[in-house]
Image (cartoon, rainbow, N blue to C red):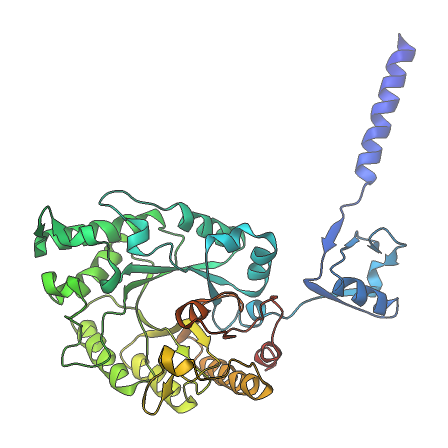
Length: 415
């Protein structure tokens, strides 16, 4: 009996000894670069470039099980990406959809290169509450969970889009809803959506695209049913409802075509009036759907200074740089115009596009603390909305269709 006990104790002791002697092993992949003093540097770089993994413990480093290299001779250096290069400036974000989250390759690419996400359509009113009191958060939840898992910020887009609100919101049976009913529904929608994501979404586009290109009114009555029924009060109420629901979230007004000084100035005057009334607006979102003629350094600087003068943060919220011009002969480019334009992604076009991106990022870096985010409207040159809208090839983003960085990315990270 004593012999049996001795054997059991001996086996247990050796098992514990074996476990305690095992060293914790760590892994890096192609998301890191390796710099070392004198040992086989070239092979390490090659293996990283080929997406192989390298494991190491406290004493040695191995390349997929090959002979160890003393760890003291290895220095690991993080790969430079837009995400980590701009970490001390502002988040670099992208709009995404659920299909990207579900694709391991795409989701990994997004998490490596971006620090913020915007659900492209999944938080819009017609998606979140297609019928009264029936909320659909499934796809938006998927995106939010992905962002949290990867330590990314989340921009909420959008609580109120006057031209794209669900039709039920404006009806009361067979009649048009009155102002009281519409505002009650608006408050419930905003409060319900914000409460669902409270503490997760750091800023909201509260109202999106409410101000027209031209006209004598700051809000467009022709297309804005919110305005027709509730008057301009809905704009103010939307921000107050949002602030009450989450006092810590940043609240933005989001719109396009700030490069048109007329529209920019109309937006400025309206937001200035709202701020003077105590409406809790924290920032303005410049959608920044620009073409290769870009937005000049002078105009972008003036725009940022202008809105900062009334205490507003500025974010570029839907940035892309089309290979086509946005205007021709003093007017907006149309699909008919594009039919006669080349879609060749030539060296000249690449150079012009690169210059636009360099200007945008350089100006925004100069306004650290005022510019609080840049979001691309797609993570790479996939089948984006520009292609869908105009049925024309386009290459408007910083990464190509294979998720490889364009030459401009290196320029944006070398400063």
